[in-house]
Length: 400
Image (cartoon, rainbow, N blue to C red; front, side, top):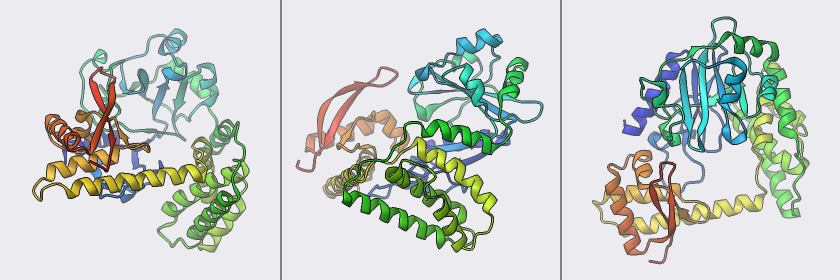
């Protein structure tokens, strides 16, 4: 197991030690219950980059006895506002994200009956989400125990280096009381609230006739997959293809409900009979589809073309390496995986080394310089990480 995989596994073991379910996402952000699962591989890559150590995203299902207060500073959330209303919070397991060192997840234990996610309490504290039963959070991708709160709170750490410290503290009584007064009574109620919020502003996308025919074909293909799902495959098949139907349906109609009955018919055609279970799966899938609208087909085609060009670049660059130069080939694959749709790569060598298990960052930096010397990379500028380390930016070129 690679160093990166070991760190991620330590984080997973920590969550499971709290009695929480851990599940992976695939490259399109679709959750899967099986772990590990080959769908963890990023979508659209030409090369064999599906190894477990390069995937960093998975979810943690909250059970209501372990809850999370998500303070999103970028959306106006302020920890100070929460403490002004309820008093100082006790030190607890805390996670920070790279978008801002003040975006934090605070994890607490509940000693009474399980809590459900409260949207109404979030309305009183804009930018702060109160997540419990009915929700999940993205999990940390590495773990180490810290001894003091000040070692972790408001510290600048990149996403694949989120650190919990201590154990979840007991949720303060005043917050728990306010939480219980404002929470909904069922998952269905919660999803209805979330869907109303997510649907604000949805409208049909203006498509060309060719794009419309393509979207309609995608919907038919997904419904066919659902109708042909065999026993033991319905969860995964429905998770993926129901989401595809809803996202494409939003492109056509601007609505999350236009294809409900066709999904139900396809499910019945597969031999499925548990319509209550299907309903519980449809609700959160609609919410996800509304929150993550699909780009029009022309944009998707552009991305597919860019991925193909990245794969061709990787094939061409690899062809010039020696048979024993495994390190260079691994660096080429990592760069191809990190490249954007405009064929640029702005990832720090230290992050490449960690994310793809490439050894010491100096070796990665040397390989990048050699690729630039050969003309496979062209330097386009510089940037800085959250810790103010300088990072060179490159464009991938197939004409060295």
